[in-house]
Image 1 (cartoon, helix red, strand yellow):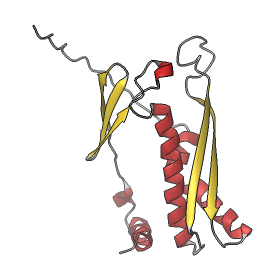
Image 2 (cartoon, rainbow, N blue to C red):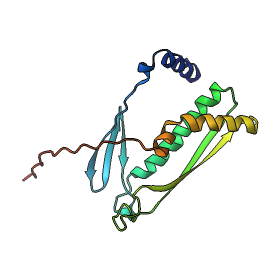
Image 3 (cartoon, one colour):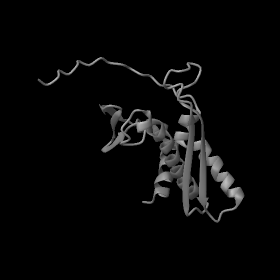
Image 4 (cartoon, rainbow, N blue to C red):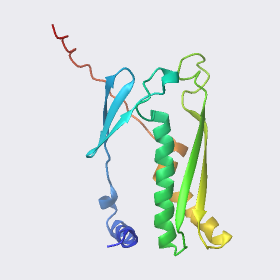
Length: 172
């Protein structure tokens, strides 16, 4: 089965049974050493770290870079699926995502500055023989249905629970 057939199958199934569309994704992470973290999603592991300029050891992308990567990849996937669904020819796509952050917010220098991105710009380059009108229709569909674009564009309720664990004893 192609991903287009799978996409259309999900559309049909979820139209008939909306409860079946509910899904939960999970990620766990732990601080390994310094500012280096190891994250796990399904069977995939990733090292997350800060660049040396921000006190890390630069062993992997930092969390705010991962947000940009997630947006770029989600855009590419959503463009692929909707181009096929809408029968708009597309032979390639790449997305460059830029985010501007004022680090005074993260470092508690100015409480009036938010710690997250001030703005994000995604530059989407599509390889296609489609008309400009078809590309505009495709962009509108992607803008309306890209999950990560929705997450970063709209306020998502987030609940943070904190649990105290027993401290590990140092080896003698």
